[in-house]
Length: 245
Image 1 (cartoon, rainbow, N blue to C red):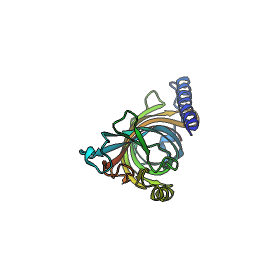
Image 2: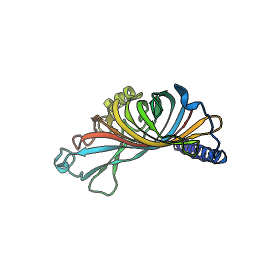
Image 3: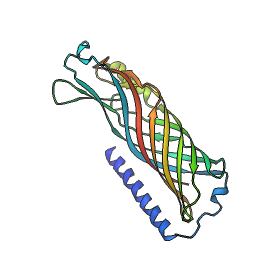
Image 4: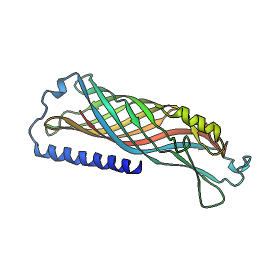
């Protein structure tokens, strides 16, 4: 899995360099001159980034039953990667509505520090099953006029609903091993904002994008071994994406 993540990140960087190189060779020559007049656009997206939690912890950790040695609980950022299908609806000269159903694979952990320097790590949904999200983001994109004929800057904002496709299996394992499995909710809603650049190449449009997401729902379902040390979890992520349309 780690090797696959590295390959995807490498391909993302390679595509970005290729797109910028192609753009520089076509400087001053307007590509895809009728592209922006079309109502619908379709394509695909590849992404990689980080995923973690905003954590609310119990202020009296040492007073919890069976947790007298617990001192600190910290979220640990994990890697995430995904792919999706881009659907873009032109709403005006400077606005688009974007729907990008995607699959994402975040790695989520909590670290429990007791009276030793070695943390006890709990993986969300038991680690082995992990999280496989079906993401359904709906975003409004505000774009600039073309710069140097073939480049646009843009910002976007919206919300995303996510559903964990392996939740039922994770819940079953959590019921069998409740002592040491961190179980998070199957559903999540996230607010999203991002910035990016469109590059109009000869035969397609390439975009690079950086997006920030913050969960609006408490994700904590069952904590496991240190029950009661965490009072709330909200998801947070940074994602770098490349799209081809």
